[in-house]
Amino acid sequence: MREVSVIGVGSTPFGKLEGQGLRDMATAAANEALADAGIDRKQIQAFYLGNFASDSLVGQGTVAPLVANALGLPRIPTTKVEGACASAGIAFRHGYMMVATGICDFVLVVGVEKMSSASTAKVTQALSGAADIETEAKCGLTFPGAFALAARRHMHQYGTTRKQIGLVSVKNRRNALKNPKAQFRKEVSIEEVLESRMIADPLRLYDCCPISDGAAAAVLCSAEVAAELSKQPIDVIGSGHVVGPTTLYQTKDLTGFEATQRAADQAFEMARISRDDVDLAEVHDCFTIAEIIATEDLGFFEKGKGGCAVEEGATQIGGRIPINTAGGLLTKGHPVGATGLGQIYEVVRQLRGQAYNQVRNAEIGLAHNLGGTGAVATVHILRSRN
Image (cartoon, rainbow, N blue to C red; front, side):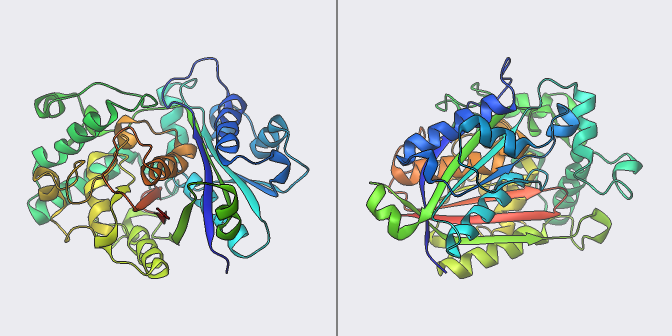
């Protein structure tokens, strides 16, 4: 297996992008990544596109070929990858494997989603397809409801408080203030979080990610070639991709996701580093409780201690392990099929020293992407050569 590097990244703003369709957003992010990589698009040998709901939300299939043609890519393999909210993380994993196995020298990976043009009801219906429609969606379980169950269980089992859960939103709102590509750039107080509209008890409005449009992209190549092309190549030193229980009734513990735990173990074993070596992490905070659970599943904090870590400031910039420095899904936005690459975009910029909320002396970063109610997860560990 060859070592693999990221040599280019790009991202649109996340939010309500009126007048911009799937192709517009995907090509904008891809062109930025190609320019950042400094290579000709004719050198790209494979193209992977992460997307969840283009056919159900905007009525468009064959998205990968459409975007490839719009970009003027050569007649190369193009593949749409779908894994619910983990679509882009899985697409990145496929691109990584194509380079690592020597099949391709240069791979372009893009994630994109257009959500704001559909009604909230239609988006909710589309997202329900990320759960098992026979055992969960048909019973009326929504994703806010599923994560509310996890929150209640975490509170009952570990004594996690409503304030600790809400402080995740406060932190991520603060982190997004300097991010010009974030959907929300306004602070909220813990009082505002706790008094916002109830969505699914105990989760309130500011505990939930928004409906978002957006795209993000990355260019991958072999580490050897990257050294010749890029002044700041970022190496992918660990990659994990695991399926978990696809329904909540199969889950042994509502306060954790097996897919995340196993994907993290894969990635850390490959990287040959410890959890303490990671300088920052972008985790899948679709809800405030999801960030707390993720930090425990990834091994940054002892089981049941994630809420205390937030309250003590351990996950803030300057804390023990800064989490979601760009604002996370809660604040930066969650265009479902693009989120995983939005995380890669932030980690790469952090490791280059180019981030809006720069973590001092950042050398190793982690990106965690989750799909469904724990059905699938990816974990990627990246390292700077500086």
